[in-house]
Length: 281
Ligand code: GLU
Image 1 (cartoon, rainbow, N blue to C red):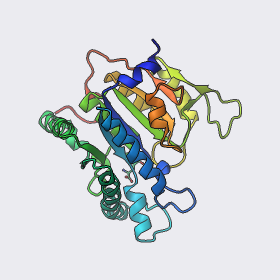
Image 2 (cartoon, helix red, strand yellow; image 1 turned 90 degrees about the vertical axis):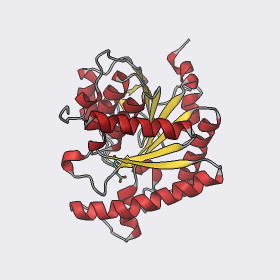
Image 3 (cartoon, rainbow, N blue to C red; image 1 turned 135 degrees about the vertical axis):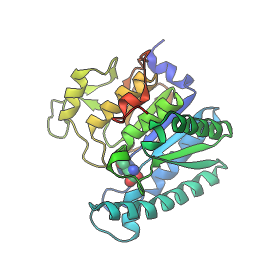
């Protein structure tokens, strides 16, 4: 049996979607067709009896478009205000679409503080467990409106791996604007080779990822490799695939050879906080 063919049996699945996979490249406005397809794919996974969590970006981008701001904000308070406007709108769109399929959805906004303290972590885990047992699809984002440098994850690749570790997910699917991991940046180097399978995330891959970046959103390839290290060490398989077509989700689940697959390598002494650049409390 190949590892790919085992993906269909995964029970608890986290899907991460980046801003670039949710918006039209020309206008930066939400691509409703893609969002609708994403919601349909996730609801269908849920209908198959799986537990599904969505980690979504887009709060700042949607907020900025709502007020007609041309460039990405750099000032913290402006970013936070955009996120406040955008997160509510983003959720409104998700809720509307999930409602069409009679699927319960909920919102969880996190910062590092949600996790550093053992009690807080346990509390967050219980909330996820309870929502999943209620049949909800939790929709997670960083709490960008209040998070500042000291308490932020910074990118949703990391956040999705953290969530996978927290809930002990079986599979993390990272949807990005590139097909997966390459030996070099394929936009700059025509000889860059696609890597279909990673048995273990080691320094070799970390070095490689530094050369290959995805420019849109906050998560380059380097953050994806770090996310892979975290998620696989916590015991989840992980896939990086291109979110240009949301149908990729069921193709991955069907075991098709799409994207880069990272094999789970649970380490016995895995401790989430060690990966967060935060003190043990
Ligand atoms: N949390 C940010 C947002 O919703 C996105 C972070 C990321 O793209 O990694 O705008």
